[in-house]
Amino acid sequence: MNKALRKAVIAGNWKMNKTPAEAKELLEGILPLVKDAGCDVIACVPFVDLQTALEVTRGTNVKIGAENCHWEKSGAYTGEISAEMLTAMGVEYVIIGHSERRTYFGETDVTVQKRVRAALDAGLTVILCVGEYLEQREQGITDELVAMQTKIALGGVSKEELSRVIIAYEPVWAIGTGRTATAQQANEVCAVIRATLAGLYGKDAADATTVQYGGSMNAGNAAELLAQPDVDGGLIGGASLKPADFAKIVSAATEG
Ligand code: 13P
Image (cartoon, rainbow, N blue to C red; front, side):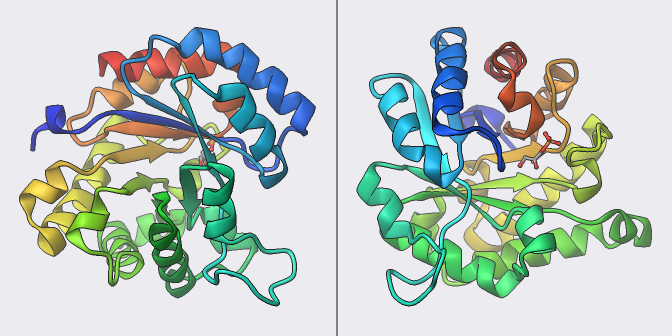
């Protein structure tokens, strides 16, 4: 496996935080600190912040993503946002299948697959989230589960389209808990995801795909996690709301 083949990607997932005015302030805090980043930097923000975020980051090295999208192009789906709506605004990335959507909003592997399909069809790059609950880790089924989530989500995705997919391994027990996977645990499962991709698409495609770790990654632990051979970046929740902390993670990825 050759880490040099793929670019590190640090993405913030702001979750349900920040009004448009607060988003502007946060991004204006982040931009000067990450302007020389040697990795890709993305901020995934609430739908209502997208317009502001796109305006504030125009001409900078920070790209903007949404946190979800629906699988239909349009229609009677009250409260939903389509992938086409996002690309029409200039959004380039979208998170799909975050565990909070799976846990609280009835997201299943099948709906994740449909959203991935729609996002790719619309021209977006997908940050696909997979990961196990603590009980599943304790049962010893993490590897099978994560491989299965990956395979179902990528059903129908071509090798060419895989170049617009980033996979984020996010163990649910590490999200927002301050309990991070060890660097070894993170690397093991990221390697399982890469082996799953190799089985589906071949080694070259797997080696070229960015696999991130997410779950309580912060300024203090990022360097060790990002130095692992199969960890190519991070999906950052809480620490992405703090410019100095987020910038430290970006620096660690540049070095990692
Ligand atoms: P925390 O970094 O707050 O644990 O959140 C991780 C996450 O869910 C990113 O998508």
